[in-house]
Image (cartoon, rainbow, N blue to C red; front, top):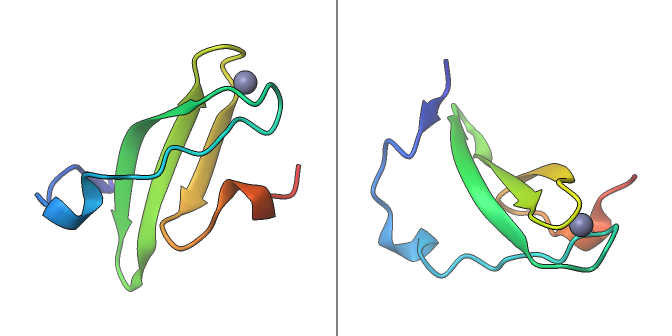
Length: 66
Ligand SMILES: [Zn+2]
């Protein structure tokens, strides 16, 4: 199982909340998974249409292929 919020990391607090590619609403960060040797995987969820995006910490939603 990946670790979820296991590391308190102050630099992660002001996380940019991406816009939903579907409805342009603000997405909410629901979880962060740490993967060994890889960027953290962040899961965002749209509260409007319930779309879920999983993105590595170094990627932006705009680059997501849908
Ligand atoms: Zn949406």
